[in-house]
Image 1 (cartoon, rainbow, N blue to C red):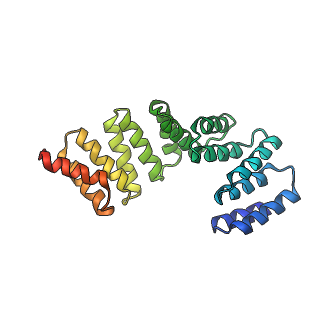
Image 2 (tube, rainbow, N blue to C red):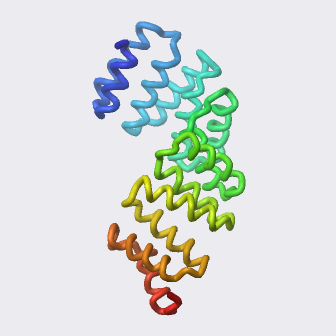
Image 3 (spheres, rainbow, N blue to C red):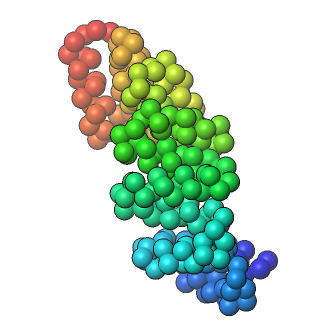
Length: 219
């Protein structure tokens, strides 16, 4: 294994200092290789030193303007800092420069959702579910976006997929209940709210939904 691979193994184990040391050695050995700078930046991001991390991502881009992972990592930092306009630009740049992976489509979609552009977000979130077909969160967010745009039947399918992948996803179960409520299927809605509350007894929205349906007695 080279130093970058060793560093990535340390990152997986949460050994940030050891990972940083390995990536620093990789930079010393190959100062023109953008990968080590991106990896070092990712360690800095993981420990909260995002300002320095951005310098490493920028260094990687200065060495290779097509270093797509650097744009993705910069976008993630901007997203976490709620700087959604800059996040969108980075994820779009990564995509234009050839990054065709589910995480980038997911993050671009989520950024557009945060900016209030659900309609624009939909195709990116849909693409993320195609590339991350076993990712419950991707299907959940796709389902939410579909529901916001009024595609209730499609939202139900997406949310059911999310729950099939993660049976303890209380928010997906709650939102499936809301979708059934829109379809005026009170029994199924109540069943979902109860399931969400079993998983997360303090789920306020599910508790509210349950009271609403029991109060209306529409099931």
